[in-house]
Amino acid sequence: MDSLKNHVDSMFSKYKGNKKMDELKYEILSNLEAKVDDLTGSGMARSEAINRAKESISSIDYLIDGNKQIYVNKYKFEYIQIVLLYSIIAWVLTIPVKIVGIGIILNMILFICSTFIGIRYLLLNRKEDSEYFQCKSTINIKLAFKVRKIVWIIWVLFIAVSTLYTSAIQFGSNIWFSRRVIITGPYQFAVVAINYALPLITIIFPLIINVAPKLILKYEVGEDDES
View 1 (spheres, rainbow, N blue to C red):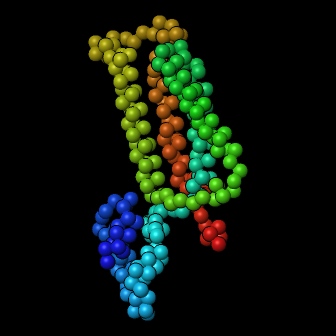
View 2 (view 1 turned 180 degrees about the vertical axis):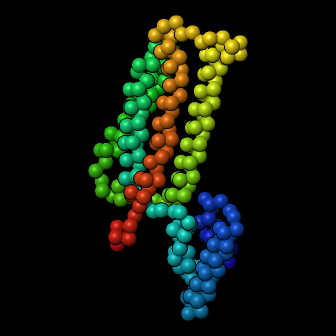
View 3 (view 1 turned 180 degrees about the horizontal axis):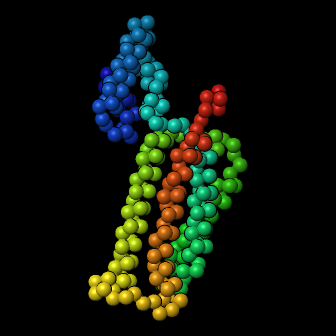
């Protein structure tokens, strides 16, 4: 039954193939074929029986381990609100570091990002249609946890490399030739401190990713909601 096979293939198209997925696909296809045989056995036309079988299952999202059905627009609205908050905090924190060139650029980028995110938030805030916020979609919470872990690991490695790089640029010759580090005044100390501190601003990225699993659980569609 090529029609049923194509229907099942389309439902699995967005998922990576593996042994577990292949077994699930085979099981669903077998069940649909059995359903068609039952319907045709009771006198229904084959074409109608195939359509009826397809209608009985239009998505396999709920069968995938870790998938959660959530109110996706509520999720997006609060996520944008959190992103806006973090971007504004980062922008404010970078105001004092404008004494160095990279600080000026970073502060301006954060200001532009905060402005665009703020506009997006205001546009979403104006939506009063209850149906918009009742829209449902499926998100895999296991993937969200996995991404969160990876992002934190990448950030820690980035900070480590950044710190070593800054140390090499600032004090490499002193360390190599065993010379004493001399900081001539408050301005030079501030510049050195800023070069070390600026990469820490990037913590907003893992913090933003960190809230995703919490929001998925917060806006998960429960049985009471579905009824």
